Length: 359
Image (cartoon, rainbow, N blue to C red):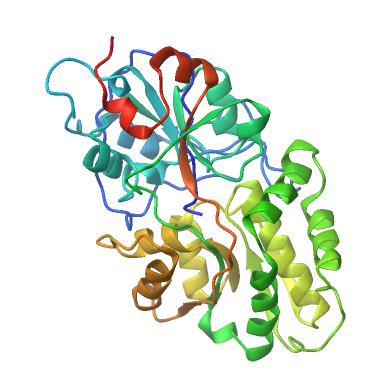
């Protein structure tokens, strides 16, 4: 997923950092498992993007160096400092090189932040950093219940900097049997944005076990019937290191088990530069993905924005060993988010407001 939201905190720190305008297909600094609910998740997230739990994350030397050595992005202000130039942005490491990341904000809105802080994949580390004032704005997933729980403000994206982020299965082509595809397609047909948001309240807010939540959802949707559609398949289901992706991976895994597949899981692997090679070499077979973020990662020149156009472009952009199955209606987009206090202080309602002159 590259699916997320920018959060802006009330506190600003005087760290000067050049922003990197790189393409979305760049391989980002790897992340360590977040302290997300699943047992496999580690308590600390790497310096990658936002992760839902721990209040602090260690930043790998490579990510730290990338942030500190980044070249300054052009300012949109005709003269004088902008609001963004006084604020620190927190996001996954890959945000520095994604087309819709630092480069996209500069290109589409003329927004250049004072500095960039690599965090987890929109997880607990990112939420804590925004709440505690370690960053002033953050890239968070739009379905994250932490937004409402903390009265964060999502800044509007009128220029569609962030493309469609429909949830869909990414599968190693060698393991995509008819039975595996039909089982995963049945899940995608039932997923909705509001439904995913409700499930995340159970996992993130109520601290319920993701596997238990996954089983309950499958039962509620009539997808827990025992069958043999995937019988004979031996699959490794993986996930990125944030709660929503872990939950979706558990849903895939349990449904495939119900259809006779032999399943093992590798959860909280990290970001795309870590798990995509695993999908290509067959050490991972299935993983929940987000169409827009995946497209921008594998195609640096991608410009598609709508769900239909993104999905179409993705068919030809993926490595030949991988396929994506039909996308669900559920979306979890990236968003720029700030605290209520920061929004009030600078009168922020849109990402474009960040390019206005600082008072």
